[in-house]
Image (cartoon, rainbow, N blue to C red):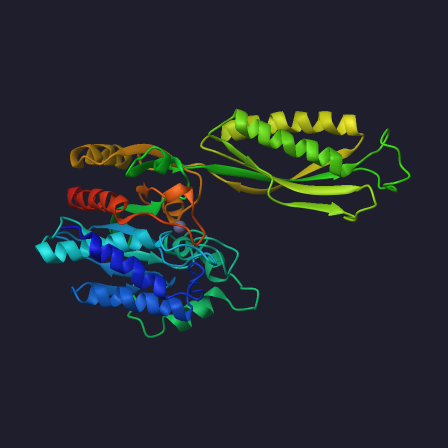
Length: 403
Ligand SMILES: [Zn+2]
């Protein structure tokens, strides 16, 4: 039986390995807290005879036995953002641990082995690159990932290698892996509002980001009449309004201005330069492009009226990720068979699964986040809303055929 008490205990115990007790959970990869968290996970798995290896990227791999030499992965990350929650990432790992404990307890040996993976450095806290361990495992941007340098000059590879020095090593043979499943908190409000137990994830939003530079003319804020001003701030403010408007018109697309910089940024001078970011995310790149086409027209119109110039620089792009259709259909069926209240959903945030999806058939299950809160101490999912996804994952592992 999938036992909620054990999952609860895992979550509570992992919370203790935390740099910021009383103010959320802070645990960076290859820190003392990470060492304690890994030691706990190991002790749970050693108690049921699971083989534990660390790969040369710093990911922790727990091998549950199958009848064949093929594997499926259930995995996520155990690092957190600063003052983050107890569920983001952690849930995907402890779900896998519970399934292995259940198999051990019931004497179940599925046709394929279940490898539970705790991915290293997913959040991108230290090396300005998310999913470092995951990139490295699937040999995508592997050298770039291993050679990332932290602000204090420490290289990922050096930090990781000294951290895992005493571990038993071994890389996962990707050719043996049939599929991967990541269970994760939604980090948004959809499932909670809809009173759903599970989100069957169809894919992950792509995004495009630009920096917009608006140039006007600075002048004395008292001596310059309103008529004829070339105020970069006033123009930027109108442009930013259009970003919100276009995003709303294209919902569920999201559009955000998150960063702004103004010069000379003082109280008595009309600004001559404002730079701001624009980010648009959608499940369809055509729709992202359509929004930008509208925005460029809007900006040009505003600039003409305010007598300023504007230019754009692309600063970021992530492709839309479509998860495996067959696995999505399988999850639809499993949710019906188990009587789990589930709906299809698209992820607005990126995850390890987004990296793996290009190499291995991949699917994600979301559980609800209370009030949609995540990356904060308030992040919470009641245990009753976690168990249905774990039960679905457990059936999924047993159904997989070695082919
Ligand atoms: Zn996460």
